[in-house]
Image (cartoon, rainbow, N blue to C red; front, side, top):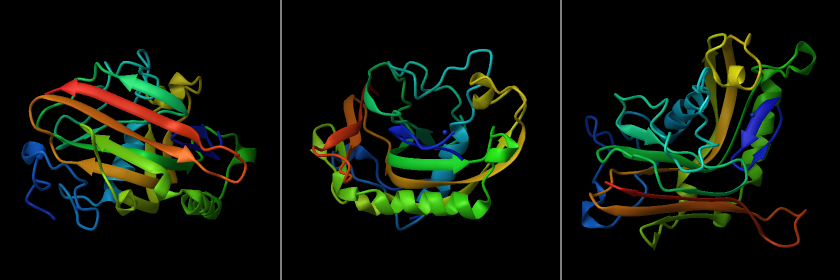
Length: 242
């Protein structure tokens, strides 16, 4: 099974307000847009499936990956210019300090604090997994995520109750055109078609931030039984000006 956690490969990798997702950060009191209600016309789960599709968009010849973008200078690639929401990413493990991401000043920000996703795209026939296996794998992943070990800090203010952004396993379909997707960048240029899978984890959707300098920090800590000391597996920071 192909899938990943924002930190480790796990296999082969909300009030509707007529387009407005609530108050901006102009009052300085930034918080998650309510995950219990649709935001910008979609639930958190639906935005997570959109984000999953976004991760497949890097394609030849450039193949610039948002995950491998150390500075953040390529963060506008593969974004939907008509969307009111701008996607950010974590890392497959370790630390990222991105200080060159040109974030639009009128868009909400959506990103995973800790996530996993899996499908059969690019796998040989003998390794294909039935849908039930994909779902069970993501269900177990979500059960083992500990929301108390997540963090999100916006301009020095820690956001609490991040468990609100939990997205249980949600089905997506990756539609791939041969040679024009992230798997082609990984050396699998013939992969094409529709590949259903599941995405899960904990997510944040922030309102558009006010003009000025901003520092966004987020991540997660691994507290599994196999570790004797808490080990950070995601430690991401974006600094930017609007």
